[in-house]
Each structure stands twice: as C-alpha cells, then as structure tokens.
Amino acid sequence: MFGIVTKLLLHKQLVFDKGRIQIFGRYSSLLPSDAFVNIQKELEQINKENIIYFSGKYSGKLWFIEMNKVFKIKSRDVIKLGSDIVTLAGWGEAVPKKDDAKNKTVIFNLNNSIVAKFHGKSNYAIDHFFRGLLCGAMCVIFKTDMDAIETACVAKGDRKCEFVVKPSKSFDFSDPIVKKQLKP
Ligand SMILES: [Zn+2]
Image (cartoon, rainbow, N blue to C red; front, side, top):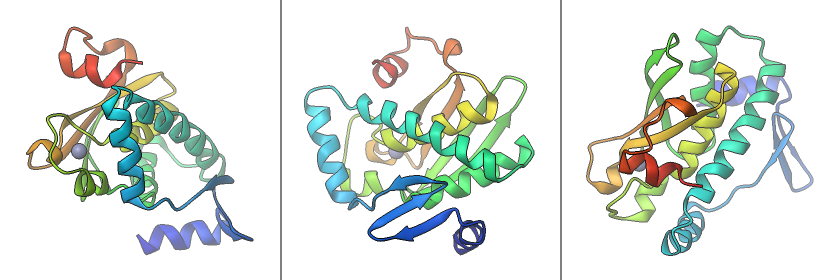
C-alpha cells in the first residue's frame, strides 16, 4: 500500500491542493464508506443499483487512460499495478486470480470489502462500485468493451467476493445473475 503511494507521490500523480485531491490528474473525494452504502441501499430499493456499476466503469476507464499516459508498462504488469491502484481507492484489496489474455477474461477476488462490511446480509452480490472500477480498468487494458459480474460475495454468505471480467458480447443474458448485474 505505502509502496504505491510513494510511487504516485514521486511521479506527482497524487496531489493535495487547497481542499482538492487529484490522482492521475482526476479529482477524487474521501467519502465515508457508511454514507456511500446508505446511498447504495436507497438505489437498491428502487432497483437502480447498477447506476453505481456503470458510474464506476466510467471512472475506471478515465482513471486508467490517465495512468497509461504516466506509466508506460507492459500489459502483463499493468494488471498487477492496476490491482494496486484499485486497492488504493479503499473498496478493499483487489487480488488478480486468473488472467486469460487469449480470451480477454480476468478473474479477481476482493478481500476486505468495505461495502460488504457496512451493507450487512443480502440475497445478492453488492460490490457494484468495485465491479465497475475493475471493469473500466480492464476495458482500457484489453482495448475492448468489457463487463464484469460478481459471481460470489461475502454479503450473501460466500467465503470471498469474486469477479469475472470479460468482453461484453460474451456474456449470456439468459443467466439471471448476468441479467440482474448488467441491466442498464
Ligand atoms: Zn462482494
């Protein structure tokens, strides 16, 4: 964690200035996690929680476009660096589990999900913002329109949170989990 903060400070990619914070030139604010979860729960009540996923995807793309300009690294290494940077965002620890470059499919775990901590039990996976950030990052890395679904989540009693990211066109929309997590 401190290694990546040092790297960002050295490259002047983490800047604190007069009440504003920039990471890779993009403004970020520290939002208390419980406040975020309250907003998410309101959206769940009206079946609009995927707004969070699509917002995260948008931000993840912009963030990684800026990151790519600064760190000229090979795609193999970018998944590790990308995980470290997504981890820095404070949603939990992103851990790459499987990287199938040929099929542009990546599996990630999320340890210590902060949303799951405050959300409490759910019948559904609930890490929508992390799912979006991760997906946005992979869209940039693989230069393809991708989507992500959370296939296991501690909020619904699974041992860990797990995510599959792959090209949008390869998802099966007759699968109820895909349908629920990717509906606009
Ligand atoms: Zn989860």
